[in-house]
Image 1 (spheres, rainbow, N blue to C red):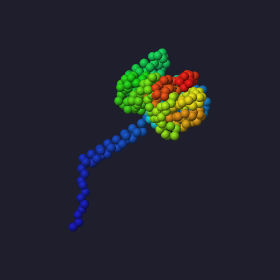
Image 2 (tube, rainbow, N blue to C red):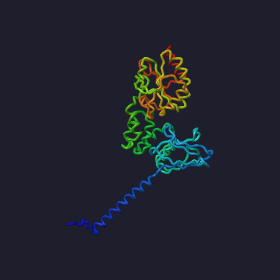
Image 3 (cartoon, rainbow, N blue to C red):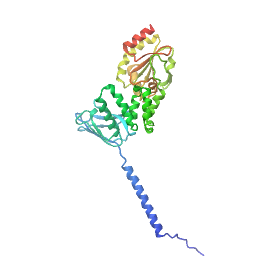
Length: 347
């Protein structure tokens, strides 16, 4: 006896429920799809004045060019995928005859320098850039002695803004450890976790607030061949701990004088231990070769150089002269002042 397969009976109520769920699902998919398509993306439309057709404009981030475009009829345009947002870049020509530090965000942005120069161009579309510009305009109108106070007040008033974390990370070594800790504690928890917040935390952890008369603090870094070298490897010598970078104009100008000093006093027990604040090894090595620097060179190729944080470097060139007993006996000695000090000690 054959059996007829049973076919489930679907009521009208069930059919209506199924259709309702189907429509709801389609609506959700459609909304998500529209949301993804409408996610804002970065673009920058620029107008200039007096710049020749064909001039290349670069977006430069951390010594790396992320995009470039050409000027045509005093206009240019970028439509670039940003590695992160907000992003602090330099908008510049190849020889830096026109340049502007700029905060980019994943929004359509406009750059209007049609009636002014690059530095004073009107920029719209980035909240972070707007905050930066408001602060710059304010500090440009007040005495230099009051500018740091205003910057600190800005950070206290905007603890949740990324620009506040950036600002504090930039001025840590200038303001010192105590002030930095006080301001850092006021930042939002989210800001403390950003790359700038991590940089500030690193400074607070490492900085020793060293002064003349203090004992030096040891550290190790890789040399140009990747070998770890410690400052203490030269403890029996008179050592100049030199901070510099390949893109530092005053550093490069001073190098020929330093080479002459080294050649004269090295046979008498003088050594130079140079820490580069470069982030690109290629640039670092090229500068060493071009300037013919014969002394020890190390770097961690980091934007937050750990040795610089230990010693509180807030601008380069800078240096510490350390005697054979490991005591800091001079700072920021250059040219004749360095030679006079070395002559006094070694002769």
